Length: 437
Image (cartoon, rainbow, N blue to C red; front, side, top):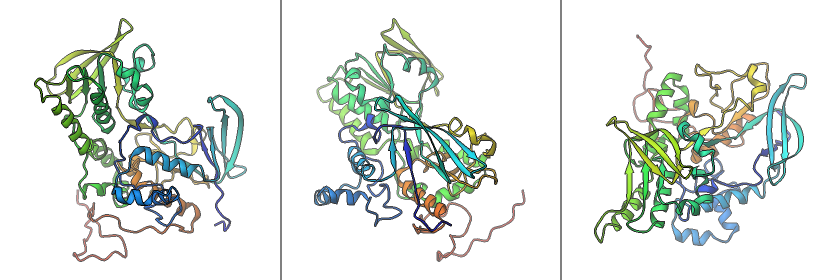
């Protein structure tokens, strides 16, 4: 409605941009192609593409000859920092404390604390805005039995998000246990294995899943990370969505096939002169309880889900590659609670434009990014959908469609519905029938 350019301010609690610094292992690559940068899949002509980043660094030809479709994580981190260093309106060291709806002004109130480089409060502030976009993302998940140990300092029990910062201390431990069957757990296990002496590796790798399984990476399987599938998933009943998400773990929690091969190659290499490496890989196991032994070691009480057997494992260090969970919105949006509409599980309802469903008396919108897996499916945190989601939000926010988006993005038709309007098809039209049950 407003013909003036969009005025935007961005608040970020951290003092500077860093993308998963604890997992920037040497040689570790993204699990999505470089086209899943901040803008390309919505606007390949943007000056903020990864390819333009390479051009500004005089690295286009080396990249061309490298023939890398999947870039290294450290390179993606450097690319993102390059963008943040040039964008106006970014305010690092600003912790948002509360969001409220000001009825008199018909605006949102945003209370924030300005932090110094050490994270200490420096000043308080308040801003007013017509609309809000939340990108608070996820936080490391620590299983309940291990929380008391992770909060103590005597024995290293830490999340994989902090791995590199504590790597030397972990390598000095006599026995190390890695918990978690995803990509992070696999990469950390491989890194530890390569750094330990042959025949004295002393590593356990445990997982709840029934196998150290590869990630689903078939071409049609990847179409679960398209806008078409997100729309299909969003239109499903809440109960169907809740049943689907845990069953689709291999779409986003499996291990890259190359990493699995590298692990097997390293283990096999250590058998060439006879014997087996002192490394134990056990899936189908969960930690029931955990405790400290003499303040220097950890005892894990394990249960095998298929056998129904139990055992104890004593270790000197634990790395929790147990994934991430969406940060709860309730603390931040407590002031909006009277206006917030929730589903049967008390989660915020989110519409197909990535907006929280609020009472109609609130004329502003609250958009969310990476807090909508329960409404949009497994693609919610995927980098490949980030540009599409941002473009959808900006199109809705401006009402001017600055980023025209394609109507169809997948060969798969996920439900018994015709193709989107305007998309030709050679097959006979599907005729919806009324339900009789």
